[in-house]
Image (cartoon, rainbow, N blue to C red; front, side, top):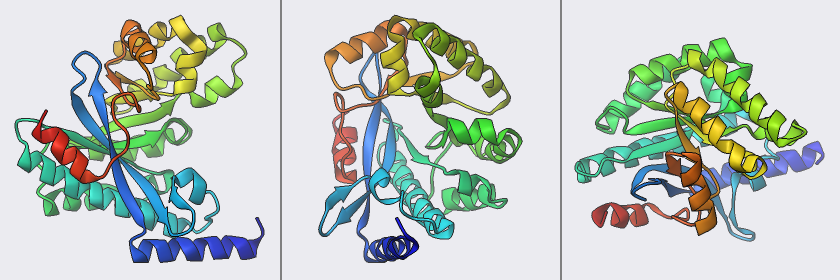
Length: 270
């Protein structure tokens, strides 16, 4: 895409943000044993007037304006904090954690923890663990010192920290299941130094490892991390995840991304 198209794409994205076309959906994450929702992930979508509902992979890829991307990402964080406060206050007997993506650009901001603290206070978010921030494996492992320095104050505020799509890079490069398993177990070791609560194991890892995925889950449990199986779409995947020892699961089999009102109904009848 040439620069003129880049500018046009960013202009459209800016307009979408200003006009309220960027919407937030929420997908529950359930405990495998009970199927009870314990997290809901905030997901960004563009309700495009011509192209329909678009995922970030379909519209953020063309945007080079980092300030715009940070602004869009922060708008999702703000909305997630508001929902976290509302749902905790409305359903104290059914506490749920709202998780939201935190980009590498957000982690670069020195004032991050201060902004998050004000956000939690402004939205009356009762803690701890009413919110969780999801960071990518690449962000954590490629910026180890910076990531630890930024994540630790957030954890001290009672915010959970989740590593998303763990193992995706290894799954794309490892030659076979045994090499993949060993590589991912090795990648888990540096995570001991971080204030983490949960990892989401990329679905490509689960598919490639098959039975060997239980070794990865056990290694994560050994450093006190709960493990989410991603992309669970049928009963076979549910049974495999349960047999492998996963704690949590996310996927269309349980819940599709939905508007906040659907989460309200889910919590009311949970």
